[in-house]
Amino acid sequence: MLGELTIDYSARRVTVAPRPLQLTAMKYAMLAELSAGAERVLTDEHILERFSGEKSDGGMSPMRTIVGKLRNNLGDAGGNPTRSFTESRVGYRMPKGETAERDEA
Image (cartoon, rainbow, N blue to C red; front, side):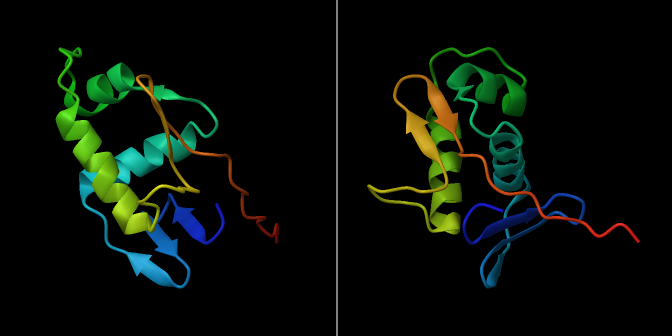
């Protein structure tokens, strides 16, 4: 959980309290990748290779478009993001969130 953002990986559900988000497969995959690597910067090359299976040829436009649309869905667009950050000329990162405690019964 990152503020009001909650990701349930096993159910593939994302909410920004209290509303559930309907994300495309690509946007969900991007969010899962960023959140799983929280605090780590995912380079543009890593993202391109991971999601298109190709080496970077400098054409990051499609990936940047997906990140921009994901940010809009998360309510994180604009000049003061809190859930996803751009590392200029390097890539993207998300801060580390809290993990939900599970009852052992």
